[in-house]
Length: 262
Image (cartoon, rainbow, N blue to C red):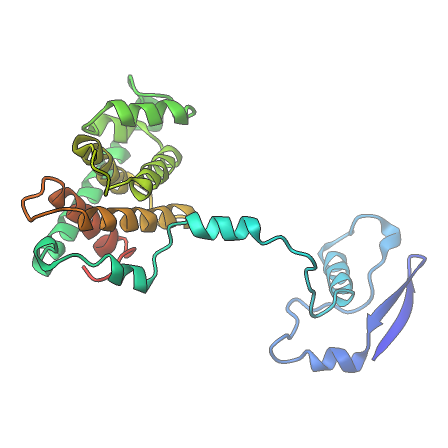
């Protein structure tokens, strides 16, 4: 089912007419062109010649290609640390009844959060990027922003206005990574530090642009997994951390849809 042709001094094996007809249906070609490519002209002279060359190269590619001796170590490590959430994990991290907020509270919280995002977007629209920074770090210095998030317990509105969308998404991934990795079960949990992280999470998700890119979306999922572990470590409904943890899960699950069962 093949034929040979000499193109630009090269002998190539090409698919036959009958084999091409078998590709109709699910694999019907888009932007089909007639004729053979002319490589003697150098770069394609027009779009049709470019498409002829694309179609020609596609005919030389096997329908199925196999990767030999593929090292899966890096992929396995990435999967193990990505923080993706499964239904089994959501069941595993389901809180006791006294730690779970009622649905009416979650709905109100999601509504209030949505209103907050609208108000913040209006504030951002009033100030051009060039006049937002003030005394805050430069958007080019992500490490300085990381230090700022450590040093400042209460995220100021001015900081959210000063940072651009790229910096905000970067910091949200950074804070989410910390929430995911935090050891909530240790005896020396620093409550103030966890609350600081959660407050920055709340502030950054209020500022982050939509739609989320894949990495930022995954970071929120990982944060939800860490926060759910943290909620399981609370000892009673009077635990100081519980309202902050529930707020994060209500936003991450109810608004961003990265956690179910709330």
